[in-house]
Image 1 (cartoon, rainbow, N blue to C red):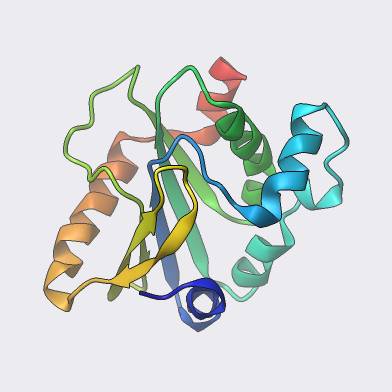
Image 2 (cartoon, rainbow, N blue to C red; image 1 turned 90 degrees about the vertical axis):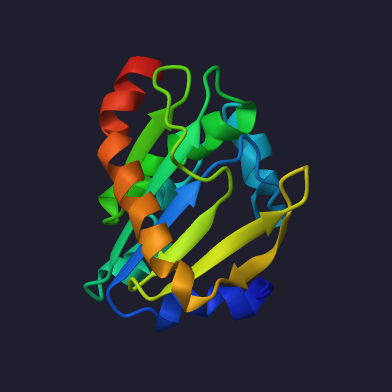
Length: 169
């Protein structure tokens, strides 16, 4: 499994497309803890929330980044935080869709996160029960078509983030 900087290098290395399926209600990311606390306290989130520089570093190179977040209302504090940051990701060029399992049944998708890079490499994400990242496992190439199918099913079922956010903010 790839962790930390090794996994982070995948975002420099992909050439055209990166897709993520997100499924957790809470992610325990050490680098986000202070920001999450500031958000929950109603603090100013700063300019990076208006136009995410990490996302922009990929999309400015012509790379396409998209995600579908599968969640269940009511939102956890973490999901409220994460979704509040999505408009800055969208401004920076990411395409984001939402599947709310309280509104629709999508049993055809896996119950784990993954990243699909350039339609040729798929990494299953592993987390602790508390949501801490353990690593990304490169799946064998014979699983690529399965995960392409998951991506297509997720994209077809998802509502655009702006539509979801307007209804649930």
